[in-house]
Image (cartoon, rainbow over all chains, first blue to last red; front, side, top):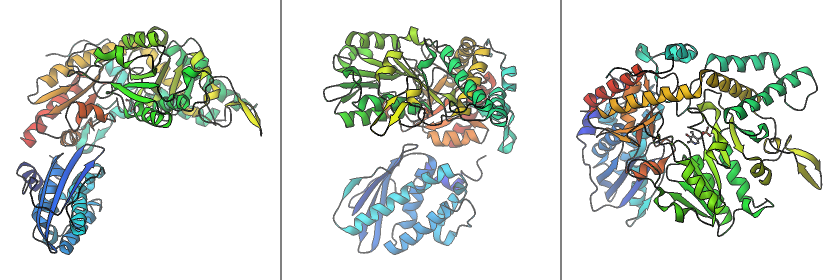
Length: 153
Length: 421
Ligand SMILES: Cc1ncc(COP(=O)(O)O)c(C=O)c1O
């Protein structure tokens, strides 16, 4: 059951999330919610120059939104900001591809498990929630001193 | 537990709803448990819509030709049917709107406009608006806007832990400053049927208006507006086996007469001059422009269909379904009902959470078995906030719902738990 949506990899990340919990220090933080279902995520990004030294997060929501945050943590920690944004763009493209895009495992790692989610328009937002928050948090981290802001998206 | 007795021949009822024969992906039969969201439509309503467009289509109230007369007669005939349905003292008190939201907005907007002659119908600083924490967003946001525009205070009844209105503060909450109390009859998220009589009695003492949101009650039980004692009642056609695009505002004649017009346009006027206009009497005063003609006529057919079966029998059927569903759901380990956990003063809409599994995931997996439920906050987010949960899964029933479908829901939940366990 649920072959295309609930891949084993997604369930693994959901049941055993990687890097979960908000950590200090961090350069920028963003809180995003999905108003239609109440999923929420807080993401913190720590930078050392242009390198992302940590992505920490906490939130509540469905398996897709929470597993996606775990995959994001794993994929983007340790990368340069430019690199991370390139991965982010590839993931967003995959999610907006209506299930027609063949995912590239070299770029997306475990993120390829979300390819099936792209076929469920109602769930795409769940998968993208943490990625959108990550973008905001990183932009804030690059902008300078710690800012904590609430976003309702 | 064996299926209890229902006064309805549900197998026969189901034959009237062609969509219920649909099979979904994986060849699963449709188990439609989302009627609180929108109901399915019987052939009688679908045929009426087709018949109107294929044989009688014309604009209403502005044509002398035969089609125009037929169309007008059918449209006004629908108004008669709705008046009978809710036992309105006069057919003129039935205002067609596009949905319940528009009906609620009509009242909030006209009270906030400050254009009424009688100060009872003008909101301003020092006045108070009272709603409840279990309202649909359609009965919260228009009042927040009205409060913002006028400087009136926006207040609300809280909820008890078991999903009822907390009426303990009613004496203070509804007071001499209260201009209007707007509350839901049956909650779309909790299923609670509210004690309207107590609220009306207190509102009478202080001279406040009472607007009842009947979106979830008018489709499911006999309604008598005089017996309820409210001043205004809003409901929506698509939840009562009618088409989308049509709703109703009923109001006592003196109240509707006192309210200023809402939208301006054709049909709502008496005479128009460049220096000013006068307005038609109710109901047309509130029906600017070409109305949803086919939809109103379709709603009339829906009323015929429901009354043909009998709203008392529909209600009894749903009570039996609700008792069965509560028993079944309570028996699933880890399921917690959000709302009253008995059939007393509650309708056939049951929200619940499954321990450790997000409603989105519950709904998705149920859908893969053909079981259609709603997940989320059901446009009543304050309810979720009140009970400290992000969302719920909601199963809602109607005259075509079977006991087998509730079994399918319970079996689906067992599988959801195994999947995420
Ligand atoms: C209690 C209640 N009020 C108002 C509404 C709004 O109805 P509509 O969307 O048809 O305007 C709904 C349904 O969504 C409802 O359940």
